[in-house]
Length: 246
Image (cartoon, rainbow, N blue to C red; front, side):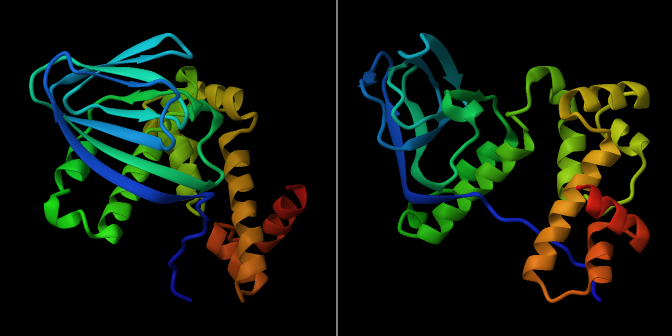
């Protein structure tokens, strides 16, 4: 059996995507008294803007290369701070489970090369190509999930290990491998990981494996031994033991 594995479903779907690029002069002010009727990602191509959000009395300055997420129905006022400030905007709806609760507030993502690459690749010829534009917003969401923005700041350093455990759960790496990903000593990594997840790294990995195994058993025509192997178990007795536990 060829060793190629992917198991997972998106719990939300982007729809009603609308893209627009805008250039404004300094001191131009725009208000959304009741917020937008859609979610928005706003990328600053050039210049700078000030966003004042009424519900939280929060003010954010976003500059060239920054990305701003604004929730649906969130009132704000925008002031353009520099001449010829250019922004690119994705407005969109979400079907299914939208964002985590942590993303019910505006979030500023500092500049990343990936943001520049995604928005820089959009030209006039792409504006009639829905496949291209939808691919771009999903690509953007992919890079944002890598940032693990929903992890509390105290535990943010665990993000590389958590991402690795969720995506590469079938690998039988040692704890030291995951600690090294986070630039932490193994004892400190173990302590902080259990504090955040309530599990040891191995217990966490096993729980992810069993979730994947259950999905495979429901949806694939595979033998139990094949499922065990695909999710990372090389010992059937241990697989049964862990499966029964979770």
